[in-house]
Image 1 (cartoon, one colour):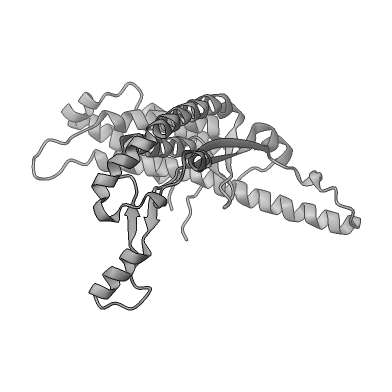
Image 2: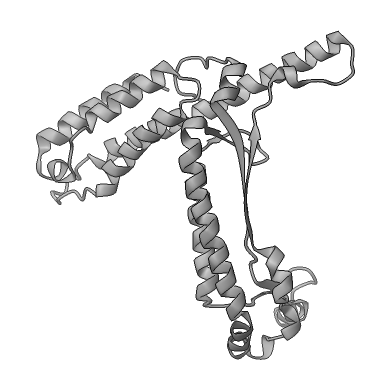
Length: 296
């Protein structure tokens, strides 16, 4: 697998543990779906299919605005969480830097407050929503399919947990010194490898953004005027700000490439890109120059 050509990650575990912490986002949203075995068997029989081929699921709440609002908020919270943290472990733990911590907490608390507000609205309307669904579901409606309000309380939840980054010296098990040293060495190796993956994620974000800008500046050969959206520059500037706060290892090369992108789009407007071939060519040249320093 090809990797970006960037500097080796500088790992000083004690310093890294002072610059960042681990965060876990947990959001639960009940899907309001139910497998109907009778319907499954009926469809299988009508289609001459063997048992187990068909699994028919019913949507217990269709066209439910309160539920759709909760699902939309869940997506927004997860997207914001992923954008402002760095991957750390397969278990879902992610890294948040000290610089990002306060804005992260503020934003996630806002999402959490809105989530529980929408949850309360849904549960208050729940009996009426079930009655409305009975007409929509027709003969498929079964009141026993629906959880009680009390049961739903636990099915909708929003939580954020924070953990310190452990240091290798935290091994306090009662084992011989040589085994403890091996455990510490193994942990340090794992820590470095994980940190390299986290930093590679930042490099990839920058690389992908540069490619997106370059591709957006290519004018089609059919003579049609190129559509340049405000979000292209807004997202690039947002990334430059994020990289300033998320460069947990203080990687000098990443910071230099970030500065070069920031300079390339400094003061630039979408109208200038749209109206001036020279401006587009200048920005493209600067982006190409940055990409050349990040060769695969």
